[in-house]
Image (cartoon, rainbow, N blue to C red; front, side, top):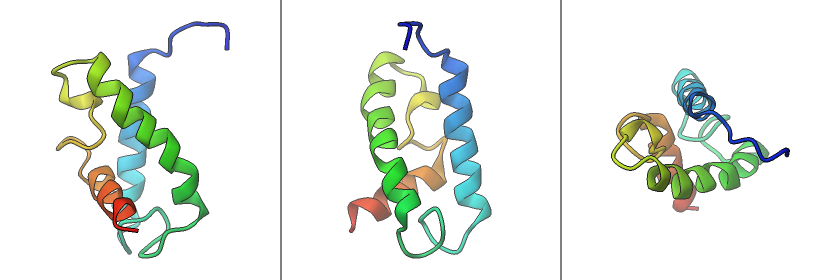
Length: 84
């Protein structure tokens, strides 16, 4: 809120943790299993913003692409959400 940029490491930790959560609960592609819940709809605008913003600002670094190979569970989540 004070205009200070969020450190890159904070973005990476968010993506890594979310990818681990999605992999840990392997009942389906969504955060709570095989059906979308409020949790998925809460995270959707945040992850869409990450997907639009991070690859463009960190060009060439695959760690900043939530739809990329580095985060397979998040990529699967995006695919499932787009299929709704």
